[in-house]
Image (tube, helix red, strand yellow):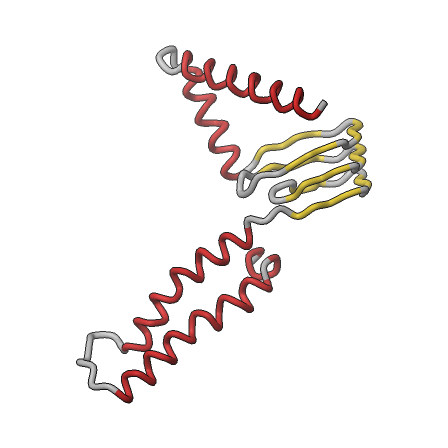
Length: 159
């Protein structure tokens, strides 16, 4: 139920947007002779309106939350969808689930643990399985080389 609690604004905007076309469709049907279809016309309008509503909620929910100058102790912190800057992590378990990207800049780390769960763990396990097969090993090696190269380029740009 995280989607309801973390994205209240999107739901407040999205739900009325879903019902306005249905209401308009109902009013149009009352004023114009439209042939009957197997589902009520207002329901068809609502279903059609749910498509852009879904994409609106998805785009608003992909925004990264900025967190600055905060200290974390021995606790579990989900880092998906957050950008941490000038934070202190002391004995903290950083958890990445792969639902959204994250950012870390100018932080202090002491005895942290990094854990991968959910979709990110599935991707990592797939790469491990591919690396175990000699036929796929060169592709994974190239992927690691690209990760190293892009990481070093980003590091050089920050300096």
